[in-house]
Length: 405
Image (cartoon, rainbow, N blue to C red; front, top):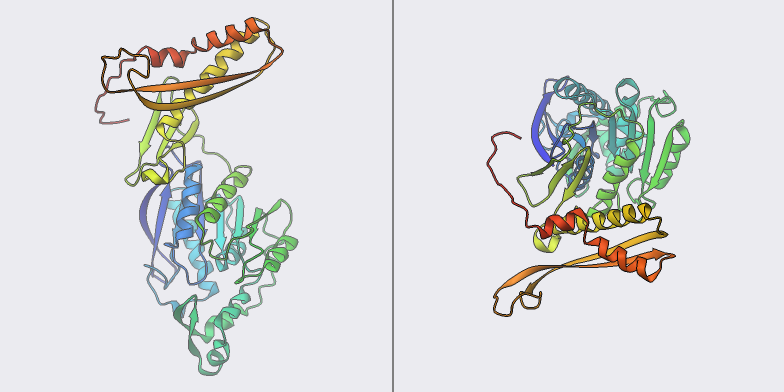
């Protein structure tokens, strides 16, 4: 993903720091606003993985630090749930003015409670996602670990949350306890996806049940079985991002200006980190990468993986076209391909030749009521696959530097 730092000013005049993550190429098909967990910051590793998955699916993501957290201005001790709601609304308005109004709101933990409280008033939001969210913001009091009494008696106290000290003032508790019986969940008016782990030890799964029961349709639930509250495992946070992308595609309005590569063209773009490369072929967006053992992140096939895929797909399509034309009962074609570097003599070249050559081995399994003659002919036809001919024909590749693509 491409990323850039952004900032905007909240209603109290403090500068809030954020980060925009974009797909590698093309205009985003939708914008997402992400609210992180209580006392977390936008640099939480799980957010990187979720945002990466969303951008790989063509979405742009804004994540920001609430007042007093991360790189944002202000003092955390002066904030409360109401100020978080205000910051979230300001982030929505910033996106709408600077880029495009977000169609999706995602909230993790207390951030989930926050998006539920503001989403109804944000007209262009189509879908809301909560991850490990409490059904009521007062759940946060359980995290104060005995400090609540001192806060009420002395007006403030330093408490340990997630291994870090935070000063909490009495106004924070009083704000949490405000009467918010406006049935915001029941009257949300947006598609809702609730995601929660049965093993969440910070916010129990019963919170997910309460949110889901209060919500009106359309609503969905996805269990994050085996994950912890902070989605510490990379696989868990990637799963969240991919599931959100798939679910939200049913509700968002795609951008009509999405870039499409013309017939006969393929665009690729490599970011400034690693090998992850986005491919645009027509209206299709793909990813190429290298395995983790080769320095990549394994988010897509390698370039040779795509090369073999092209040959395998073309082989199968060519056999289908021939079988249909000849009225041959071909039910299914399976093609297995391998690529190796072999010594030239092993590849059938003259023994005097030196060095290695590329060798692609193609194995074809044919299913159907076929005669021996038909099977033999189909194997011969495989060599007429256009991609096969291109590879054997040693195509001329002309490389030029371009000032604009």
